[in-house]
Amino acid sequence: MSGPPRPLIELDGVTLDYVARGGRTRAVEGITMSVPRGACIAFVGPSGCGKSSLLRLVSGLVRATAGTVTVDGRRVTGPLTNVGMAFQNPVLLPWRTVLGNVMLPLEILKENRARLAADRARWEGRARELLRTVGLAGAEDKQPRELSGGMRQRASLCRALIHEPELLLLDEPFAALDAFTREEMWDLFQALRRARPFTGVLVTHDLREAVVLADSVVVLSTNPGRVAHVHAVSLPSPRTLADGYGAEATGLIAVMREQIRKAQA
Amino acid sequence: MRRRALLPLVVFVALLGVWEIAVPLLDIQQIVLPRPSAVAQTMVQTAGPIAHHARHTLETTMIGFAAAVVLGLGLGFAIGASAAVHDGLYPLLVGFNSIPKAAVVPLLVMWFGVGTVPAVLTAFLLAFFPVAVNVAVGLATLEAELRDVLRALGASRWQIFVKVGAPRTMPMFFASLKVAVSSAFVGSVISETVASNAGIGYLMAVAASDFNTRLAFSGLFVLAAMGVVLYGLFAAIERRMTAWAYTD
Image (cartoon, rainbow over all chains, first blue to last red; front, side, top):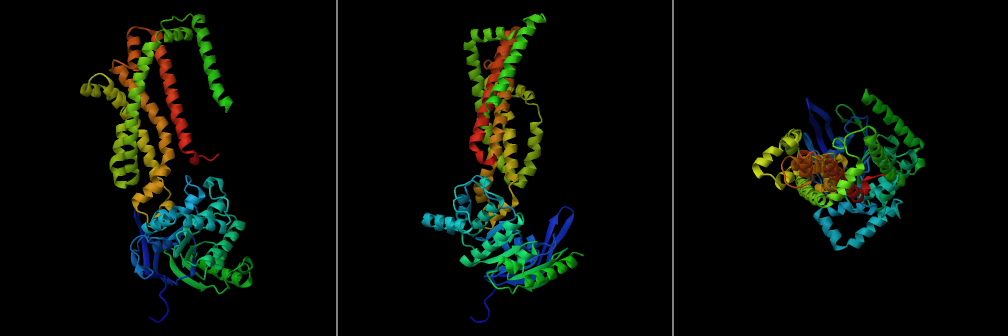
């Protein structure tokens, strides 16, 4: 086969209506776009623009009202399996240790259970290594309630990655963290991507976060959510904090802020 | 911690003291309100029969309670897991729960005769509701994100239940046990009072018909002690089993 490789994610005319009491609400409309394998894309936009809906569409947790979602060449009709997800709320299981939480994804899918059963020590070693990468060495046997918010979010990232998913979906994962911790998480996210590449879809309201982490940023308009603008981020990778606060990034952020302001009006 | 254990005891003893002094002081007849010391005397004298009846009450309570836990868990899980079961069953359960259970005892007696069976059933009827409701609420309030995390991993509904739903419900389940055991206790005593030939409730009924106030108060104290112990026991089990749910 020749030609460019097929993108991992393809959205074609995707529209999503929520049926609620008293009628339908259109969350997103006519979204057509694609995400190349290995890239990281960020969705930004005013609140209520359907950012989170897009994530749920890609993961198959909701089905499109119209249009098609294709992941890895297959049309999405139900929840994808083996996807990593992380949310603003780290939602760790409070009755499990940190290590137990990170190991959870391996206990679900049959093929993962088989992998775990075949070599438990190897996977536990991998979980410990992931935790070390995110600075949680020594916290493996702690209870989630003993951790700070930032530490919990790190553990939640480890849980999203332990089963080596091809696709990582992040819904405002760092929004609840303080500014310093958030910036640390940007470095961490890039380090994790370098260590084992994955395709990332990030929903955020932090424009600088989008610029630092994503290869391209999609600005959505609101009511219903449509693709308003797409920006390729040409900063070198890996990006340091200085890059994120540099002239190029700041210029792009200013442009996007203006676009979002207009999209809201 | 010591103070929290000691203080109620001090207050209790002080109240007994006031009672002891007030009865002769206000010239209250013993048949209306016996002094605590007189009640204690009766308790010692009739320790054998009281222990026999207390054991009987404890047994009926625990059998009814055990059945209530099993059914309450099952029902709670079904209601919490399925919107259809919730919509169809929950209003009926609430309606049923609002029937004063004392009114059901005569029916149970007609069906099963005077004795242990109506007591066990009354205990069961009173106890299963709190268990079912707590379990159902615990399961229904599972965080949407947590469900999404698991669904995106390819988890089936059953796996979501086993991995997250059921364990997350445990604190509410164990919290309901101490309420349920108290309810079961109330149920069996009510039934014993109306129609039984054993149990503390029966003892109280007999004491009342003989106008034996001292014996009635003896039964009351024993009931209070049993109630406190049962509640304390399940409160302790709750703390032990679900330590993770408490931020200290």
